[in-house]
Length: 71
Image 1 (spheres, rainbow, N blue to C red):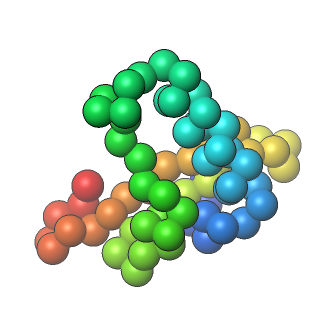
Image 2 (image 1 turned 90 degrees about the vertical axis):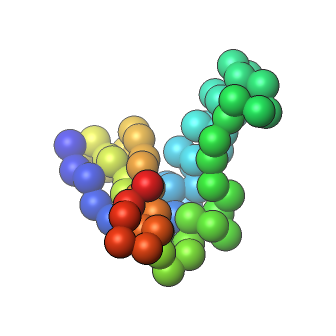
C-alpha cells in the first residue's frame, strides 16, 4: 500500500473522490456531510493524498492548513 501526495485532478483521484461522494450522499443528509469540491481540494493551502494498492486507488484524504493549524 502506498500513500502519496498528489493532484486531486488526476483520473485516479477523481474516481475515488466520486465514489466517496456517492457513498456520503447515499447515507447522510446534506447538513451532515463535509467535503471539499475539486477546486477547493486544489487550493494552495490543501495537501491531497491518494492511497493505492496494486496500482488501484483505494482511499484518499486531504489536509487544509489554516493559519498555523491544520484541519
